[in-house]
Every structure is written in structure tokens, then in C-alpha cells.
Image 1 (cartoon, helix red, strand yellow):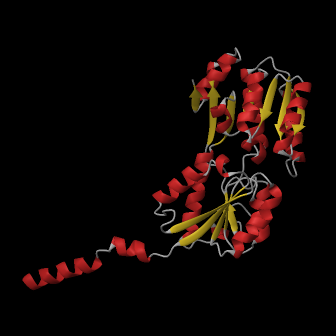
Image 2 (cartoon, helix red, strand yellow; image 1 turned 180 degrees about the vertical axis):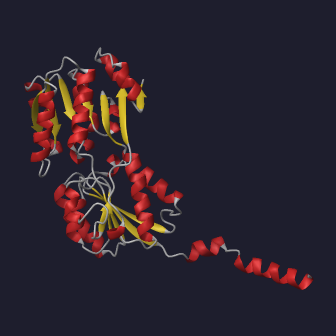
Image 3 (cartoon, helix red, strand yellow; image 1 turned 135 degrees about the vertical axis):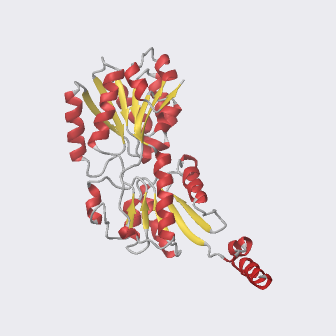
Amino acid sequence: MKRRGFLAGMAALVTVPDVGYAEQTQKVRRIAVLWHGSPGAIHMREPFVMRLRELGWRENQNVVIEWRYAEGHSERLPTLAVELVKGNIELIVAGIGTIDAAMGATQHVPIVMTFGVTASEAGVLGSLARPGRNVTGLTGDVTTEVMSKRLELLREVAPHARRVVALHAPIPDAAAYIADFEAGAQKLRFSLQYVEVRRVEDLDAAFAKVRDHRPDALYCGGDPLTMRVIPRIVEFARQHRIPSIHGPRQFADAGGLIAYGVSLTAIYRRAAEYVHSILNGASPSDLPIERPPKYDLVVNLKTARALSMTIPQSVLARADHVIE
């Protein structure tokens, strides 16, 4: 009995892992995040890195993350993507507006989309269930259903509004969306005008065009360019007392009236889970492309009071967040 007990104790000692030794000898993995905007405008870092940490990946310990920013210049993205591929990156996380550059740079390095393509556009990758290529991740929310939902919310909170101006950056292949968007606006008795802004430097000129339309409300869904200048857009709407509806909640947090769109925090946490799976051996071609996991409705009551508006209880009851 004593001998058996001694051997069992020795076996236990042998099988207990030396955590410190494992951490020191574990291979350090190298991934990259390709971002359209600037470091100060990135909303991804905290939820993405936090979820990786929860899954056992610690930045600069067992995983190195190369962050690359185009500073709002789309033309820089292809070069940045090629540089990452040449740097022997194991995986690229493609932020908003960067998927084309990432796909153009490699057909072999795994790519995880965050808000990369819409569900209908994802057909170029095969099927949503089995992409069949080196690309997987999450689709965007630029769908006719979401855009129509925003217009419906706007009608609820501003029942007398007629003229709506949509402020946006160029949207590739957007003819079908615009047609459906306009049909939804017509159904809700909105007169819809578009003001396009191609560069941050053109924003003041775009604001002048918005004023010329004398809108009752402003629609700004939130694209990579307008996301970089959220404070300026919100301040413009405040100065001219224009109710505004947006996509990402960052607009409402900054003072926009209402935001309805995907939860960016949920998207980036889910992207980290894709990264975890691929680093552990999963093939991106076998990981289904998913729709955004969560949508948020955010109402800024402080802005509503400043505009002398009363938000209906039916809207407040559905809100995920109310800013007092």
C-alpha cells in the first residue's frame, strides 16, 4: 500500500503542468489588424483584446498584434495589406472598409472580417455556411431592413419631419440599397436628399450642402469616413437644431439623437473568437460567415431635451440604452 501510494504521488507530480515554463516556451503567434481610420478613432481594440485575453491570448506574451492604420486614406490599404502578408503574419483581421484590400493581398493567409461584407455580397466567397476560401467572419449591417428600421424610428420620434438629408461617404455597388432605401422613405412620406463626402477635408462643404436642403432631420448611418468625424457631425446637427439618426452607438454617445445599428463591441468580441479558432487549427473555409450578433437602439434624452423633442414611450421601452 505504501509503495502504491508513493508511485501515485510521483505520477501526480509528473502530470502537474509547470505553468511558468509553459508560458515561457509557448510559441508566440503573430496576427494583424488592418484598420481604415486612425488609432484615436479605433473602437475595436478594447473589446477585441479583452476577449482574446479571456480565451488565453495575451498581447505581447503569447500573441503579437500588428496594428496598421490607413488614417482614412483608402488608397493606402492595399500597400498596408501587402506589407502585412510579406511580414509573415499568420492571420489578418479586416476592419470596416478593408476587406477588399486584404483579399487582394492574399488568397492563403486567413482573413477574419469584422463588418466586412453584407450577407448578399458574401456570395463571392461561396456560401455563408461554408465560405470555401481563406475568408470568414462577420457581415456588415448595410441592409435594407436596418436602413428601413432607422427611417421608421425617425418617423416615430419626428412625426412631422418631411425633408431628410442622408450624409455619407461613397458606397460601392449601392444601387440596390439606395433604391430600397428611397422606397422606404417614400412609404414613410420622407423627401430624401443625399450629400456625399469623399474626404474629411470636404466636410465643411458637405455641411453647407446639407444646410441648403433645409432638412427636418439628418441621416448618417456611419461609414469609415463619417465615423472618423463623429464629433463634428453631431455638433453640426446640434448647432442647427437638426434631429439626427445614426448607425453605431458612438454617434448617440457623442450627442446624436438616436442610433440603431450593430453592437460593435459584440462584433469585435466575436471576431476574437474566430481568431482563437483559427490559431488553434480551424480552417477559415469551414467557419460559417455570421450576421452581426447584436443590434443596439440608443436614445440620447439630453439631446432630445435640447431640441425640445419628446421621445415616445414606445421607443424608450425598446431602447437598449438611454442617455440621460
